[in-house]
Length: 243
Image 1 (tube, rainbow, N blue to C red):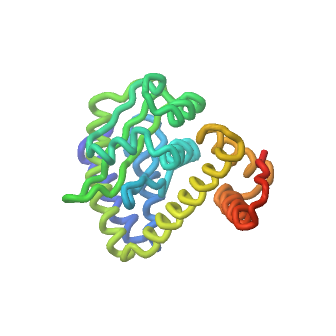
Image 2: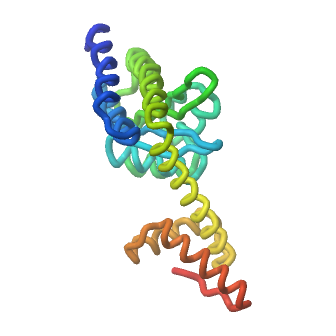
Image 3: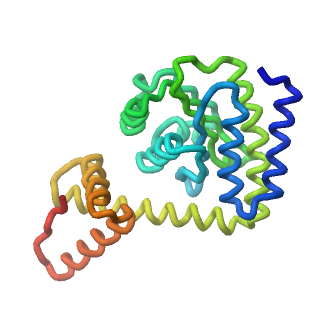
C-alpha cells in the first residue's frame, strides 16, 4: 500500500498535468486517468460537471465509466447526480438494491459490483462529481474511501484552476452543446411517445436503436425527428412512427 508521502506525490502530479494541458477538456481526461492510478484497487473513473442544475459527463478513464456517467445524464438520476445534489459521498455497495432503474440495469449489465461518487465542492459551488466504478468482488475499504476523498479534494482545486485558466470557454462550450443535445433528444422522445404510444424509456430505446441501425448520431437523428414533426404539424399531415 502506498505511503502518505507517495500519495501526496501522486496528487502533486495533478498540477504538473494542469501546466502541460492545452485545454480544460484534455486536463479533465488526464485527471480521470490519474484518479485510477491513485487508487489501490482496480477502478474505472468518470468526471461529471454540473451546469444549470444538470449533470454532464466530461471525462472518463474508459468506456465503462463513460457509459455509466452518460446514462445518468440522460436519466437525471444515479449516484453521481445524488452526490452533486446532496454534496455528500454516495457509496453504492450493491447496484441491484438501488432505485435508479436505468443506471441499475446498465450497471448490472456491465458486471458492476460497487460505485463511489464524491462531490467536487469549491467554496459554495459544486463543480461536479468524481465517480469510481469497480467490477471487483473486493469491497472498498475505509482506506480506499479516504484515498478517494483526498484525491477528490485536490482534484477540485486543480479542476477549478483549469476552468478559470480556460475562462470557461472550452468546457462551457462542451457542456452547453451537451445540454442542447439533451434538449433535442427529450423533444424527439416526446414525439416518439406520442406516435408510438409508448413510455419515455421505450421511446429512448427506439431512438437509440434507430441511431445505431442508421449509423447516425443520436442527437442528429433526434433533430431530424423534431424537424419532421414540426413540418407535419404545419401541414396537418399524418404522423409516421419510426422503427
